Each structure stands twice: as structure tokens, then as C-alpha cells.
Amino acid sequence: MKNRVRMIVVLVCVFVVLPVVGGLVYLSRTSAQDAARYYAEAIAQGRFEDAMGVESDEADKGSGIELGGVVDLRQGHFVAPNSVGSVRVYPELDVWGRQGASIDLSVNGRTITREIYLERVGVPRPHVGMWRVVSGAAQVEMVRAYGYASDVSVGGVSLGALGASGDGGATFPVAASTDGLWHAGYGGAVVYAYPGIYDVSVAKVSEHTQVAVDSVSGASTLSVLSESREHQIDVTQDESTRAWHEDQLGSVASSCVLGDVPEGAVCSNMSVAGAERVDVEAPTRDSGDLLEVSVAAYRNDEGIDAFIAHSRVCFDEEGEPHIVVIRP
Image (cartoon, rainbow, N blue to C red; front, top):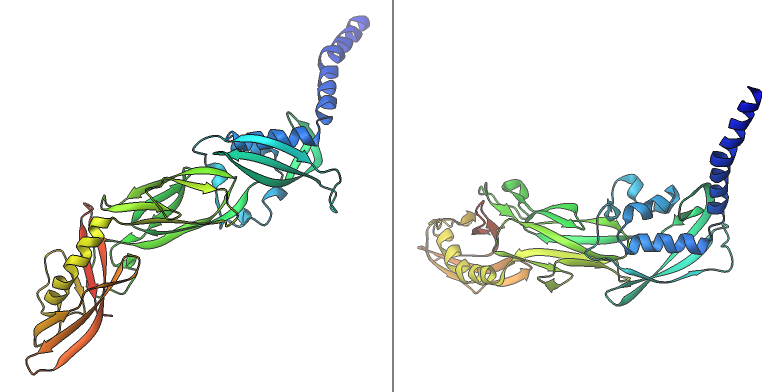
């Protein structure tokens, strides 16, 4: 009986314990070069979960992720995979005892270099052994946005809406009701992203709007490649709507001054009591979608009420444009 027990123990050691120990020894010999290349390839191929699995908690330090104020694009995805060029391990450790390495990623024929740092910690894992990335390839980027959209997403991760419906969404003071109309507004987010090209998806509130990414009209991708780390997404009126706004504003402003608000327009504080005639100069575009127009209202007692009116376009639930004009 004792001999049989001894035999079972020996077999367990031979077929279970020794392979496990051998595997751990093998993994512990994984080089920093191999670990860094595995990490780089995971990023390049869009296997973000694998890349994040190599990173320690320290890798996100200073990014703002832990405070909840940064959108984590590592939860998103690329438009297309990248490829890995060279991976160079530095010959000496840094002052904190970390192993530095530089990785080259090829994106659309362009080479992007990121510096990472690794440490030997914890239990060996497949592909990376005992190495963990303590300073990774992701970096903080600022994505600003403006316009009309119920949602803007980058890499499948939502950055939220641009503007809002009703009086609460107005970007300038409107005394008259704008219920049911979508105002343009600001949005965007600070994001934490691996280098690459991400798709930009916009839920438009109107087909009379157009999208531009980093000043490229009609673009549908955002490139996290440059050193500027700043981006702009605009969802603004298309050219025909801008021209319509400029063309119609004069007559709308005149009617508002005379107290005869055109159907579909919104006038705020525009009426001038006793006005018989109105002169409206050609509008000027102050910034983006805001138009300014000089108005002179002539009363029957020959008095003149002159002022500057501001105007923007809002969209109704069907996506049709409406002119909103106010006297600040």
C-alpha cells in the first residue's frame, strides 16, 4: 500500500509539478526585449485588452484615469491595425531601476516612436514573463468639439452630445422660447489613447450639418499620432444652410423689429414700438455659426433705435433649420 502511495506521489511530481515548475522557470527567463515587443504588437493589432493586461497600475499614473475625469480610449478600437518596427531596449536601467525601451509603430506609412518602461515584478505570465509595463505607450490627448449632435464617439467610445434641445441648451441668452429646437454647443473630452487612427462617429440632429475633424471637412477618423495632442471635431451647418441663414437674416430681423415674427423663426427682444421702417445691413460672421447684423429702426416720430442683433440657426426634431435672432 505504501509503495503504491509513493508511486502516485512520484507520478504527480513527474507529470504535474515538474512541468509547472519548468514552465515558470521558462517564463521567468523571458527577456525585456520580448516583453516589450509583445506589448507593442498587442497595441499595433488593436488587442488593447492584452496590452492593458501587461500594464501595472502605475502605468496610468498621472493620466487622470484614476480620478474619472478622462475618457479611456483603450476601451475602444482602431480603424485598422498598425505594424511594429524596431523594439530597442536601453543598455542601462534608469535612476528608478526601470528598464527602458523604445517601440516603433508604423501607421499609414508613418513611424511613431513611444518610450516605455518595464519592471520585473510578480508571478511570471505567458508572453511577458515577470515583466510589467510601468510607463506605457498611451498618452493624454485633448479632443475639443462644437456643433449639433446628440452624440460623438471616437473609437466606439462616447464623448457625449454637442448642444442640447430647448432653452437650457442655448449658447446665448434667448428670452423667447426655443422648446423643441436643438442649439449648438461645446463638448469633447480629455482622452487617454494608444497611438493610432480611430473612427469618429457622429449622431447628427440634422442632415443640414457637416462634420470636420482637425479642420478636414468630411473626415471620419481621428489620428492620435502627432505631438500636438490637441484635436477638434466640428459638426456645423453645411454650406447651403449657412448661405440660407445669411440670405434670410435681413428680412427676418426686419419682421422681428416690426413685431411680425415669420413662421418658424424665433425673435428675442427685437420688437421696437412705433417702428415704421427698418434698415438692416448685410450680416457678418463673428465666429463659427454666429451672425451679427446692424439694425436701425425708424419710429414715426423720426427717432432712431440702432442696435446690433445676433443670430444662430437651431434645428427642430425633423432636422429642419430655424433662424433665432436676438437683441442682446
